[in-house]
Length: 235
Image (cartoon, rainbow, N blue to C red):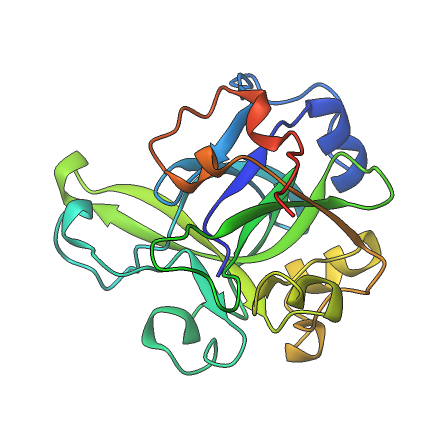
């Protein structure tokens, strides 16, 4: 699963990577968040009328079929597994028609060490682009929902698509997000690509470093850049 990531995004980088207007949206005030958690508002790129657009969404899909308030939706729908994306009720009706790109600066995964002592905490690792790119692009899907507590206002929410890990990621964790290259963006967004795109990333795409276990808590404030700084591990 991918349940935490870092978002330190600059509009100039987003506009260049996703071919958007350099002027940026009038509401752009996206502060860095080094501990992005499910249910928070996140950046996405969607396609509308053949053109790409920036949109803020809730991370964790609330499906159109949900009739109660948001607090009553208790399911973990921030990840969509490639093995069940076509069969699970929450995802099967939207995965081909409602697609998005989720830009991240990097993401976290936790290593549960074999033979760990009882009570030993897993070690978090931070994954970023090996070539130094400021953005890694995750394949996403989204849905719309009408919020009964907000006059039926439409809310958009998204999920990251996750798959089996490549060998590099498998050293830490047994899942990884589906990561897309720029030449794959259009086919993903317009729905012409199928599950053949939902595969592990190339072995040379990512870099990883161990980071502080303070990131283990979703309550750790996200305004602390030291959360992504490498730490030394005990022998």
